[in-house]
Image (tube, rainbow, N blue to C red):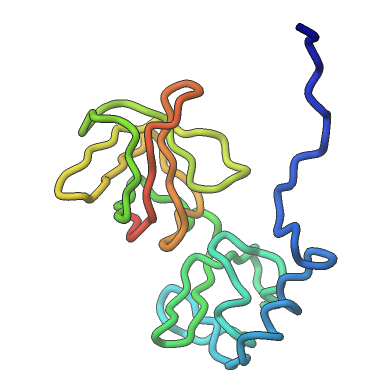
Length: 169
């Protein structure tokens, strides 16, 4: 048997099927733009946006809001067509709730590591599952937990399962 080295290719970490990784131009082709407010955590308008679908929680680039401190997207209120911006510390949360689960473990609770963003380091946590709802409580607050995105649980190199983030706390 001949042993071969695996091919060394750079890992894709972005939307590779979009020319030039310009997802904003791509999205504009399919979804009509609808201007709306960028608001602070108190609901005060501090800027304008071209469409909530052009923003993601944790984003700093492209807000174009003058401020004495850097501002980040800390939430998106699609019903109100508003982007919520604030300081980085407001991105951090200690727990999340997820549904639409795909579990590969029979354990309904335990210690694990979790990822909520592809570039993020795995974070130590306690998880529990009850009535097809996953709750994850992190040892340390985690940045940019985003409803609608995935959470994946790991034990070492083994995937325990995951789900779609419903809420953060």
